[in-house]
Length: 480
Image (cartoon, rainbow, N blue to C red; front, top):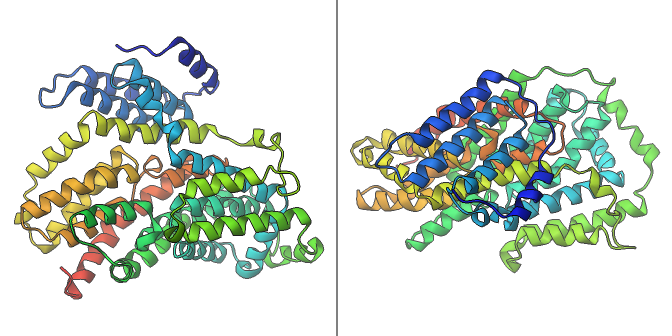
């Protein structure tokens, strides 16, 4: 068993969330017993470290799905378990602290703080109500389409959620919706879930799409923006928006709102023109959006843009924040929950579990013997299955090459196989599979249980309803 250093142990002890409440003793027991049994079970075909990695992953997964303890605490226990059991090293487990995705979220939270602290967020919320107000459900549908529209401009789902979260915060405040209430959850999910799920229908709307395209181009093939859109937008773009909206109508009741929504917009007249602080934030936001939207020209990573703008927010006469304001931000979701999600994907790949599992599944699948529908739909189902064990960003990097090589070896169409994989990546069932969705939890306005209900519905609708419709649509177009 490998032991971490004394200083590292002390640091982690100080970082532990306090008094993690156990909500369900039975679920907590299962979260321990099932991984322990797998940890010691003899599985000759599975490497020891891979088996241990899977056992620890199951602890995290069961804990997150059942809500037995705080998500952040379960994440930190998972991070500690990997090096303490010798499954991998401490350095490999906590390498996520150097991940660009983590720092993109931290920079995004600081940018969001600048929007809300100056009152700009409230102004934007009132403007949104002026355009969409009058009815709560109509407002949510409008927000969902707004989230989708942003996918055509901003290539990263995480960046889009970073931009939309402050608007969601202020909309909840304007409408007097408390943290954890159905009204606040609806606003956050209408914006965040729609821009995440529907964004995959745009080739540049999701980083897994870009990774998938890069892997495909190494094989001497490519997919053009219009080609991707023709296949994906009619079913998955619009379909995902309505699936998100349907999940909100199913799981949440319309909240009690403070009178006519349009009446609230009269406050805009009282606000007057934007203050100097608001104007500074507007300029900085404009700079960020311009850099994010044109990254294909300058190739500056979105994380560097977020950190640049968040740094400028603290510069005297340029920014609007002081470092005392940052203390109110909840970084534990980013550091422990999302950190554990990234670490799980890295460890499962590094220990050989991913290669072993994909080999086991594909070896006996007989995909090449299935008909046109079964062949493509089973690829989507398998991709969806592997997404249960890692973030979709990690999955697209690890699983795509394996499937492409299998398709080439068995005479399957590689482009169609790639599209089928993309569907499996686009519709995760659980929050831990999608870092942008988890990011919303850091604001405290939506609970893990509320997010879980929405992702289960939308993920299920995507795989069980939209995917078959899309494949029939492709067949009618003569594409498969």
